[in-house]
Length: 434
Image (cartoon, rainbow, N blue to C red):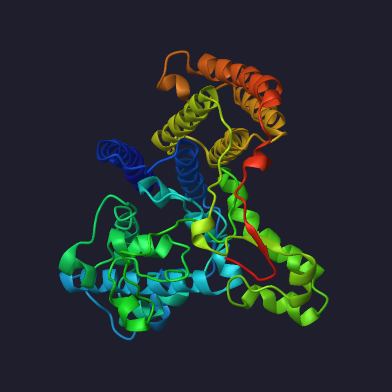
């Protein structure tokens, strides 16, 4: 975990720095690549994913290390060829795992968060799942295990492979000539994130586009069909925790409402978007039928709310970096408490961004939780070692934030439109949608 924390302490500022560069470049080019609330939501989603990994909130049924020990046909020494083969094996596994997520209702839930932004930029790349509580990655790494590719090599390459997928989430890089036939490019990945009928469920590869070309899922970006980003059934929220459970909640409701017992079972394993006929009739969902009629989700937020939301995100990130710096000195129990607090914090300020009526109560719960931590432990996880009077600063922030959110909830929001009136206008249809 210490090694992972050190990597994150470099990666997190690095990703944020590159996002800032892309934003500045988009301003220079006169292109609209970012919206404030959408960007905060993407960054906050990345924070939730990082917290989930730190707290190890997932169950690995079968580890790759165990699998390779049991099924390897040969034993390989760690040579440069083994590193290359391991990278290819991970990329192959990533393609099929990704394709499964786009193909089956149950698995779409873990991936919808990544597609939920209606913008396409480097911040969007950080929209990663917290809803995959059981890891099935070993299934797709079975070929690697048969080859005897060492577990320690796979462990090193896996995060590198993941980070290598960051750069192509942008609209600012055009097609790249002959590279379009070798690697996944921004052009190809723009297609993947688009909800146009021509582009839906295409370009599943992570690094090498050969998989898409080989298995029939490749689609070139067309000059006369501009990409429209998001998901067919718009999430209509900035709250990443809500986004992570929306699809699963719909599946659970459909299973409860379905009259046939066979439908209650099979809907989980049917193609993405499938719903029982009787449920479709009684409970139609709203979705974007024609990509070019999409109305992007937005809340009527004041400049003050935008600034406060950015401030809240920066405080969250600062606290998470503090957690990573002292991760080896904080007990597992305290680490878990710290992580849960940050989850509540993210839920609180993204609910305020949505102008939810209960945002103030969530903020109160967050502040009471935080003050309770200070009282119970007598310290904010060694923060005084980093910042003089750190405990006082934390306590002051927790108290002041309640009053600031009260202002938004009871003064500003009272005189502004209800956010539900500003949600995307979708076309009702009695068919399923991703």
